[in-house]
Length: 145
Image (tube, rainbow, N blue to C red; front, side, top):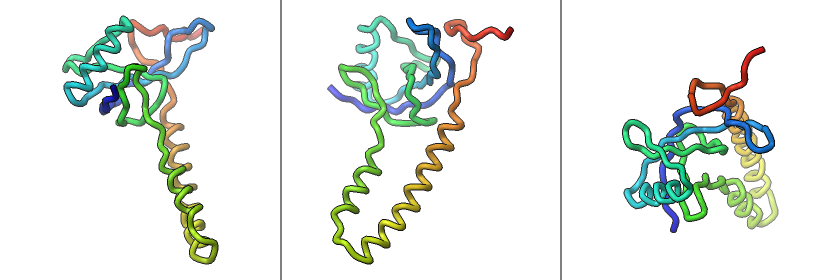
């Protein structure tokens, strides 16, 4: 069973301490998708003993993985995950198939510019996704001393 859902970020927060006492950034997403996908998600989370919805009836997903303000996720019987972007790997494989020469060198040079721009954008996105404390009775936030 695999279903695709759309995730819309609601907020970022810091988790409760885990068994090691560590706290991690978390993202709360509202899910939308086909009735089958949402039903599969509800069944999965209910079986885990944790299912909640927002005021509009959208299922909520707490993730330790940031997928952006909106992203696609896969619901399977093993859980919910955000697929990794394999675009760069696939593009590199296609370039590697090209015959050696000036044309390949020009394509590699342009690809390198594109790759660097993408990496800068990802770094910029990561820099803006730092977890910030939010008011939530379910979440324990650090106390200022």
